[in-house]
Length: 325
Image (cartoon, rainbow, N blue to C red; front, side):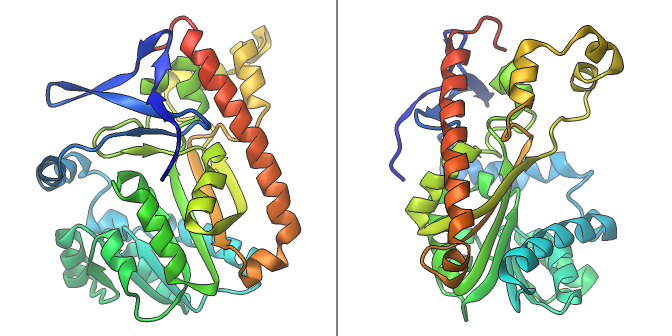
């Protein structure tokens, strides 16, 4: 994807993260809030996921937590409610990219959808098949999963997976090709413009975790993503306004509010686009849904252009601001 990249600078210094004893620079798009990291070598990335990632994620990355009913009900509800709102019905078929052990795939299937899922982690897929009897999931990376679908899919969704993929932009292009003419693409990713990171420095954004998260997207980047992948934005939001750590909670405590909200916090909190998680609902350009919701798409594009300009201005201010972590 073509965009204007430069080193991310805060308080006059390059922002870097450490990986195995070397500093990796954060890179930023000049025309939005998007931040990315160059991936390590394929061998290093494979070694990380095989030997470090799963061992460090045992509290939430297990077959039992993946099938937790409340979690999967929450995700299925919000994805399918978006489908009903914009397509007027539930999708007949779905594909989850990065399905892990297959818990959400099974929940979708239980609601009458021909649900399938893929994940690069063959061990997780095998365990989901063995322990839960889930035959709707298979091992594949995102490019392979989308390269030759058996039939067009009405819903493709991915929750906190695409930020891991070195081939993010090609994945989006292939997802567009795999969608049916009335299909929808639902994506949830970390937000590079999360308010806590803007106030305390990019490395304090809780999503910054190299080499797991190679891409930190922003709302202002959505139109560029859509142009590259032949999609249009129907809806977007940034949920999870604050993480639940003590410092974030203190910013909104009764005592802090009684003393007055800091100017920077008041300014940013009054705008959209600064929550922790960026969610977007996209549809094929020139498809039925894009035509049916042309007025809404135009409004979204106007709002996203305003957001993009805010992001550029904020990044410029952070370059000069003292005290960025």
